[in-house]
Length: 143
Image (tube, rainbow, N blue to C red):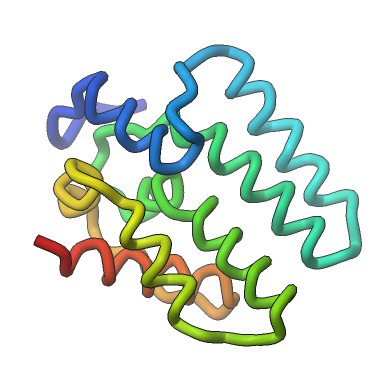
C-alpha cells in the first residue's frame, strides 16, 4: 500500500464495516473469508449464487478499506450492497430504484462523509457497477 491520501480512523473504518458487514471486528478470518467467497463466486454458474458469494466476500473485505483516494476503494464500501440490490432485482424481476434508496438510507453518518473522500464510483457496463454508482450518488447527496 502506498502513502495515505487522507486520514481514516479506526472508528470510521468500523462504521464502514458496520454498513457493509454488520460491524464485525477486523480479523484475519475476514480476509480469509473474502478470498474464499470470491473464489466460490468464480465456481458457480447461477447469477444469484455468484452475486451472493461476491457480496459475502466484499462485505468481509470492507474491513480492509485503504485511505487512498482511488475510485476502486469505493467498492470496499458499496459493492456488497450493490450486489445485494442486484440479487433483489433478480429475485423480484424488477429494476426499481427502491433498492438503492433503501440501501442508501442504511448508510448512517459518518459513511457519507467517508465516501466523499474518495472519487465517485465509475459507472461500468455491469448492472452491479451501475447500482454501485447509483448508490454512491444517493449516499453522497445526503446531508
